[in-house]
Length: 188
Ligand code: HEC
Image (tube, rainbow, N blue to C red; front, side, top):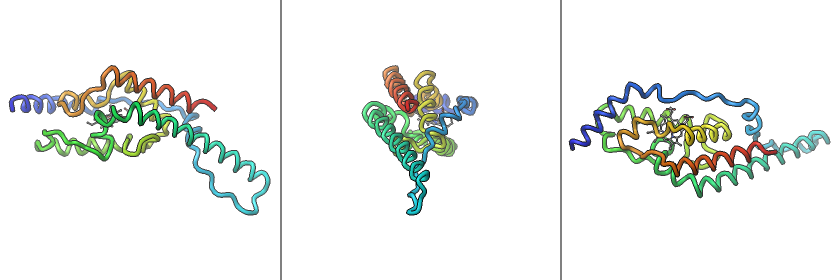
């Protein structure tokens, strides 16, 4: 019980620094365009030759991209998802194991708010490409940054022992996966 009290005190004392824990990242507009290819709409019966050529090109691009995503997701499922399940899903998915201190008055509101915010950034519930307000390549860059510089899970929760820290091995796996994925997406 003494431990729990101590953890709660540390938890609260860290509240004040929470808001400043993360910086914003600059994103590359050019890359955002290349990944934001949507499934081409069905072509009209009376389409001109040019329209058909354009459609075929778009369709091909779309298929190439989908295949890249499939490959990236296969590696994700194998090497990364097990790490994320234990260390990230509590905030970035629909599968949440609440910590014991969730019941402490005031804490519930904060945790709920954090989870809501975490999910608006990135939600791992549906595998790669992740549900996100960013493009897949920018998500990968954010994850690479985390592998290199840390920052997730937020320090406040690591201190409060909800969700453990990423180990060096986890970070290395994340780095390999993000590097390979980014390279694949940049390739024509
Ligand atoms: C206890 C809750 C919590 C856990 C656990 C957590 N996150 Fe987050 N995450 C947040 C919150 C809150 C935000 C949005 C605000 C911010 O950046 O702090 C966020 C933002 C993010 C972002 C987008 C912003 C950025 O930093 O580029 C990424 C990517 C991310 N988290 C990845 C992860 C990964 C990977 C893990 C697991 C290793 C993880 N998170 C674990 C709460 C959490």
